[in-house]
Amino acid sequence: MYGMSLLRNIGIHLMYVLVSVTFGFILGLTLGILLSRAPKYSKIILPILSVFNTIPGIVFIGILFLYLGMVPMTVIIALSIYAMFPILKNTYVGITNVEQRYVEAARGCGMSNRQILFRVELPLAMPTIIGGLRMATIYTVSWTVLAAMIGLGGLGEFIYQGININRNDMILLGAIPAAVLAILLGVLIDLLQRKVTPRGIRKEEKSR
Image 1 (cartoon, rainbow, N blue to C red):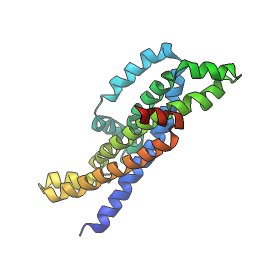
Image 2 (image 1 turned 30 degrees about the vertical axis):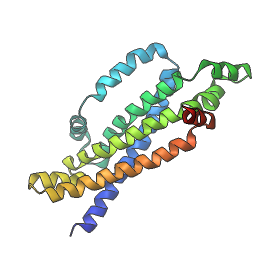
Image 3 (image 1 turned 135 degrees about the horizontal axis):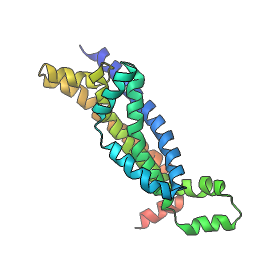
Image 4 (image 1 turned 180 degrees about the horizontal axis):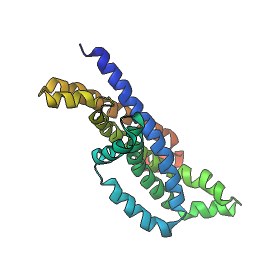
């Protein structure tokens, strides 16, 4: 009965997640790198962003809805910004926690600051950055449910319909696929994290 509708909403839900996390990753990675280069400003900006992150998603989507209307970009902008936070924080932490001996060794080899960033700091920080990506992706799967509140589809459509007509089966029809999506995407990112983790770090983790 709900077969085609379920597949359509899974597709919409997944599209929102992938697009938003992609934008969030680009923004978070870029800002994280910039803030790691400006510790003076990061002490001010990071706490402000943390406060902004506490604003409920439904409030932010509601504000954007007033200005942009019922269009997919309303959801994508809101989700991208929320997805950005854990990636930005992990990028900043990952880069600033790279041991200085590696940076000094690279500088001693004649590398420029740009080369040190891309050849030393980012590769060593990548496991932490991907950890932020995993967190952002799983959170975004749940936040995307809010898209249905402004009539933009996704698995939240079943959840809100089920709540309105008091039908648990409808709620589960939206909740279970959302949970499965979160698990599958989490597993895929775990595999990616293993791929991007330098061998030396993997050996250190195994030996612990």
